[in-house]
Amino acid sequence: TLAPQAETSGPGSSSDASRICPEFSKKRHHELNPSYNCRIAIEPVAMGAQESKPQAYEWKVSGPPSVSLPVMESLQTSPERFPQTDASRAKLVEQHIQARVAEELKRLQKQESDALKFAHEKISEAASSITEDKGPSRYTVSKEIDELRNKLEQRRIVRELPESVETARNNVIRCLRENDRRPLVCYDEVEAFKAEVKKLEKDWINKVTA
Image 1 (cartoon, rainbow, N blue to C red):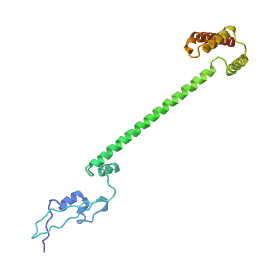
Image 2 (spheres, rainbow, N blue to C red):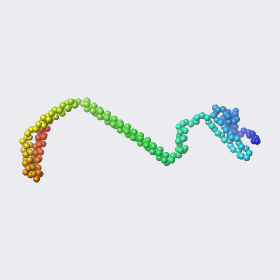
Image 3 (cartoon, rainbow, N blue to C red):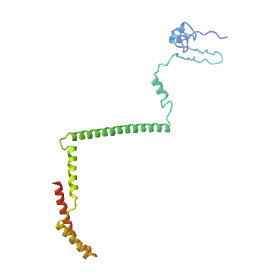
């Protein structure tokens, strides 16, 4: 049989436990007051053939941990806990780049949308200012166009050509008949006829627009 040992002040002794858990002095064993939320399990020291070993403690805390949830998540996802491989590091870099690209595209789309909106507003302002300016109305312009069209229809009546135009025309016909194999010889006659036609067109335009 083992002789009872006296309490010492070494590690794992009752005095040490009394300092940590005050209720230990009242109840010497591992059943303590639950309000202190602690329990000490003292391993018996084997005497005799085995060497004495330091007594071990086991602390168990009832209730939720006092560490906040973000700290717990950061500890769980820390690089020390899960070392990053080359593939995971490349994936993180790719995700970061994709996020930056998406953000830049969103910014450019917003900038383009703002520019289009600004352009539409400017066009609307310009159109409203033109409408408000004093000038010929749409009815007046339409009326003038109709009058001009009527004049042109009246001028389309076939009339005899002036004598100068008729003479230049006959000269071109005669020259081409005489020099059917050499049409370049009639260059002067053709230029004279063009000049008479141009003069006739100019006179006609002046009469229409008068």
